[in-house]
Image (tube, rainbow, N blue to C red; front, side):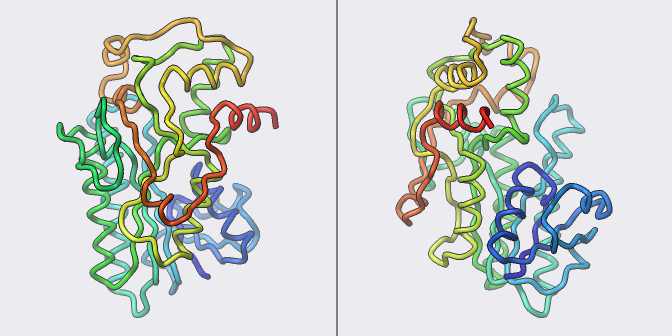
Amino acid sequence: MRVLVTGGTGFIGRATVKRLTALGNECIVVSRDPGRAATLGLPPGSSFIKDVSAAPQVDAAVLLAGETAAGLWTKRKRAAIFSSRVDGTRRVIDWMRSSSRRPQVLVSTSAVGYYGHRPGETLDETSAPDPTAGFRSRVCLRWEAEALRANELGVRTVVSRFGIVLGVEGGLLADLLRLHRLRLSFVLGNPGTFVSWVALDDAVAFIQRALEDASFSGPVNVVAPTATTQGEFTAAVADAVGSRVVGRLPAWLLRATLGELSSAVLNDEHVVPSVALAAGFRFAEMDLHAYLRRILSR
């Protein structure tokens, strides 16, 4: 299978390209700097292009590009987060529309931020979006709407609503580890708030499965099936690096210092992967403590 991958040099993208290539697929990676991308250790046989308009005919597309959420969400930062996801996806769908032979399947990205702060609720793919229309949810709604335009072109479209993707190579965990290794292990906000997470390998395995399994279509929550609270999450990270939880940073303080970014760690989002489980997808990593100890001991 020849697969177009946007965001292929990012945290999830690198792991995705490596897995797909190891399984015999050919990956064409879209990068703003193809020369630099070619030096990042992606598998031999990967090719690099600067713009999707230069892409050859492909069998599938995986969209993983997006401005990092790390950093204060200033007006400029929010615009970059929105544009990189929504406008970037629109360009790919427009390219598909003009292509003489379209991909058979598109796997796009979204996030559990779609649901917003929902204490006391268990959220599956049928749940409504954030009733307060927060920034994260607004981005996800527009992002998904652009991707789902591919259905009109006869392209099977899967929208992956990822929880926090955990791996040592990047993402939120890499940032948290710096603090925990300094013995600054604090619960962020309410220790009873639910956190939806997924192991990097499971996230990538789902992308592969979604490309190959025609039964997948539409939104799919990609989160570990086991419920985890903010208190349990903090304790697991601290334990994995030999630290201990020393206190709690109250929500008001995080909102005052992080602004709108704080919603990414304070929102109560008990999300379940109903569609994936019903289709027989097996999450290899469901024990957060065991998973963190294993990947941090490597």
